[in-house]
Image (cartoon, rainbow, N blue to C red; front, side):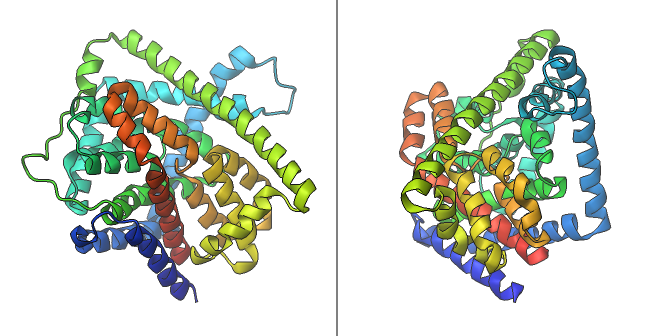
Length: 396
């Protein structure tokens, strides 16, 4: 049965992407098929083999240790605020972003991270058939963040045509930043977080290749990274200060968004419940339940799963993860895995503003272009999450 649902899920995802395609005749099917096969293989290796389990445990242990180190700094500054035995979300989940941001800054400064990104991007470009800058951007977005990544390619940003700009932005919205992966791992099982990151990397290219197909000529396929030059202008301690503040800004912004979105969702739920006798999230659950079902979630769990999925899209992934972590015991292990993978991406309405704002800060004209195709970006990124969940539904 799960194989039939998997095939149905692929047909629906690709059908929805095909409907939104801006040039169906230019779609290259061979790279898409290769990447789907790679997704299935990688998902199987990560979730169903000892090697994959050991790799995920190693990554999880690294982030657990980083969170422990972060806790030392947080306890020193805020140790007297929390009551004994309590773990406030801001202190335990958001503030560790500051320290992980520092680690990323050090790897960037030592030119280790740019080298890793460049070579993984090169391999991806050979698999996906897309340009070097698209492949670099997809890996870099997963490492340094959806808004910061555009700084590293700002020299080329103003020269990119609309179709290539869409793919860059779609990659940034489909993945997640390494600086907040540790925070995700406090709310979801690490194996699903790691699996989602890997699957979304390919999924972003798959969906973009259908919605936004194009060919890059050798003359256009140039990668000019300026992040390395920028680091040479700073001393080591200047860089540390910058990344510490960047990490703190991210924690504050995420915290502020959570306060606003959680409060707004509570208000809407209450108002809708008083009028219709059902919460707004329950209504969203019924709307999204068919999507949950084609991903492989059992029908009797699809409404609750659909509610969490919709919450992620209309608010953000943190709000959805918080809600989901409270009710995971109400889901089967299979549904937990599929929903968890779906949640690990920046595919939500607020990301449209974040990405458009980041690009506009570097190039106003291109920022306006991104704003115009913002809804199409969200549409594609959501399909990426559905595709990743469908792949996991086959494996579990």
